[in-house]
Length: 140
Image 1: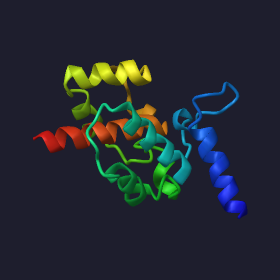
Image 2: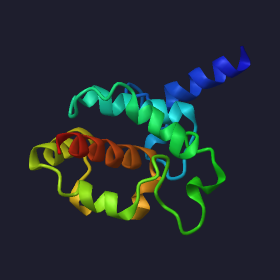
Image 3: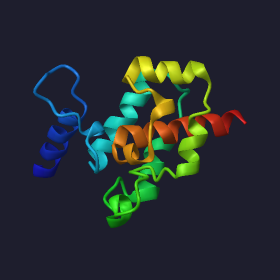
Image 4: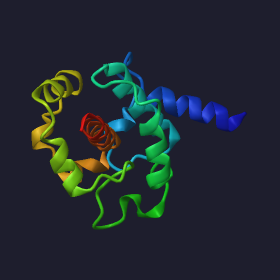
């Protein structure tokens, strides 16, 4: 019961858009855990920028880094974040269609072509990179 209450409270604070006192853990470098991953995937899903991925993004976070809880997720010299984004993948995502990039800017206020690897430590950025990559890979 205590863990359910804790997860509910964390999820509420990780994904709270209705109050000013909430902390958005999706944009805090090195945040991790299932609640943070769920908040990121919900934000992306609710943005309606991408087609339904049938929770692939959620599963990738678990497989890559156990939702960011693996010790190597934020190890020195590694900045791929919860979704394990590699430098070449980030660069590939910057070539997404201008329609997608504009929607990302409008929804999240992120100028994607200027994002750097170090920013992959923020869960939402890592999630967006992974989701763009999935979209582009699926299109090809």
